[in-house]
Image (cartoon, rainbow, N blue to C red; front, side, top):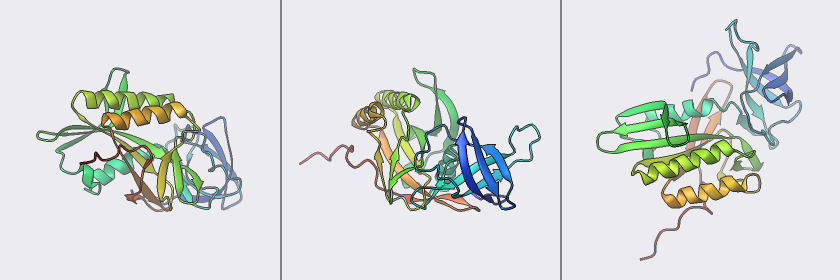
Length: 244
């Protein structure tokens, strides 16, 4: 994903009322901009750390700026705009970067499905392969150098999505949980059971039911964000291969 124009540099000052952030720009001015992340942003809210934001020329917007990238506790860049995750994954699929998802004829977004009034992030369809339902989750929580976790806060919505994916598999379709890790240098991903034990339990049930889980790390800069490579994911929860 090319960022045009490139992002503006600033110094992060704080987040409040969930969707507001203060940033000091390179001219020393204090700006209040939109924070597009509903999670806790744990280990990302480091006062006076370097950050990057975008500006919109839409006159109807209350806040012209949007916080996009921040420097986390470990000095790594974290893409905190959760809305970017779907675009990054879709872009990678369309470029045939994700080998597990190659070969489908059609890609749709935000399709209604399920018994709990949900919308799937990405739906792949093919006359031979059938359907593949993909739920995308943006990961920003780094807990030690290179180790990232999801979620960073209790997510009843995320648990609901797991139940929906389980039902999709039971209906005979393919289902995938795709962790889009927006943290430079991430090497391994695990579930944050201590933060949301219910999500962790439901994720285990989903894996046992046949829901596929993969994680890809993004490479972030002020000019471009792309999915870089797959990283080991949820090794403790994966179903072991059956013995001969």
